[in-house]
Structure formats: C-alpha cells, structure tokens
Length: 84
Image 1 (cartoon, helix red, strand yellow):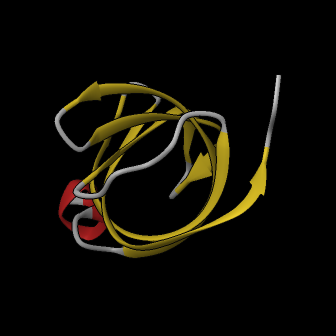
Image 2 (cartoon, rainbow, N blue to C red):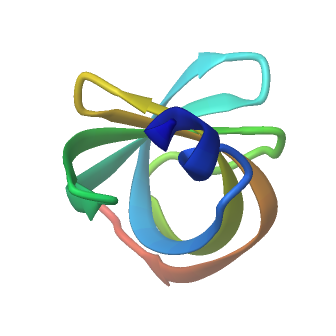
Image 3 (cartoon, rainbow, N blue to C red):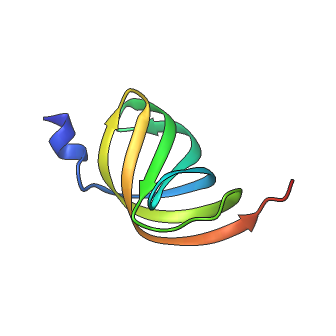
C-alpha cells in the first residue's frame, strides 16, 4: 500500500548532481527521510543536469527502495555552482 501512496507524489528537493548514470538519468547527493524511509541516494530522470551544480527540483516520486529515491523531474533550477 505504501508504494502506491509514494508513487506520483510531488516533492521539492535541493540536491547536488554527482554523476550521469544513463540517458537523462542522474545520481544526486541527498541524505534524509521520505515517508519514514531513510534516503541515502537520489536518482532523477527526465532532464539534463550539470555535474557539481546544486539544484532546486520539483519531481514526481517513482519509487523509494533500499535507500534510493527515484523521481521523474518536473522542473529544475540551478541555485549554486560548486567549483573544485
């Protein structure tokens, strides 16, 4: 039941893009909680992002399993640049 409640739930996230993991699929740094589940990693799909940039993102949840929150991006806006 909880997976149905999670699916398509709109959320807002602030996170930093770490790497590309597929076509329009990106791994983000994120530590926190979602609906009582610990989240260690965030995967965003459906839009292009630049590595090492921090974004404010609105997204629909696809699923949350074993600490990985997977979402489809609705809109995003870069908010800070990080340079190494």
